[in-house]
Every structure is written in structure tokens, then in C-alpha cells.
Length: 95
Image 1 (cartoon, rainbow, N blue to C red):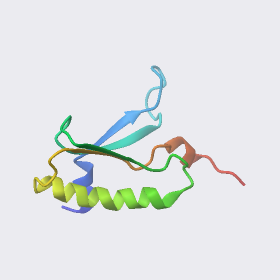
Image 2: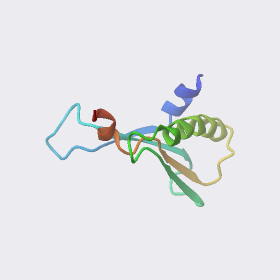
Image 3: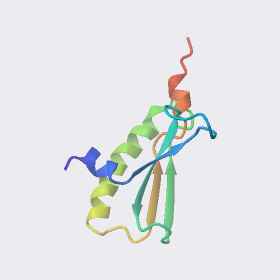
Image 4: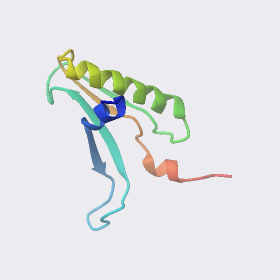
């Protein structure tokens, strides 16, 4: 299994659309590792400013490592990762 396949097993998409906007509306990817609701809990977020890529890249790499750690039972709490908190911002271009 590749690291991205391992990450996909932990993925949930949280829609940003109000009721009625339907299919194709943007969503935020949330990755969860460990036991839901367990403590301690860590929340990591990047990409609030959509043009700042280093944090997004770092969390993608970290998510691959967390997927392995979770599969091996090494996460005793819960880790929630939001690698791109502003997907709408990624679609905007300024010249």
C-alpha cells in the first residue's frame, strides 16, 4: 500500500456548501488518526492562506507517517490533520 492509499483510509471530506448547493461544492479534507475522541488530542492545520505551501506539504508528509504509526498501533490518542484549510483560496488567482 502506498502512503497516499494509507492516508486515504483516514480521509473524510467536510462540505463547505450550504444546503442546496449540492454536488461539486468545495470541501475540506480532514484526516483522523488514532482513536476518535481519545486524549491526548492534537489538531494540525495548514493552508489557511492558500498561497502558503510549505505547511501543506509538511502535513502531507506527516500524514503518511501518521498512517503508518496508526496501522502499527503507536498512536494512543487522536491526531486530526487538516492539510488545506482553504480550498476555495486555491481556486482564486491574482495577477
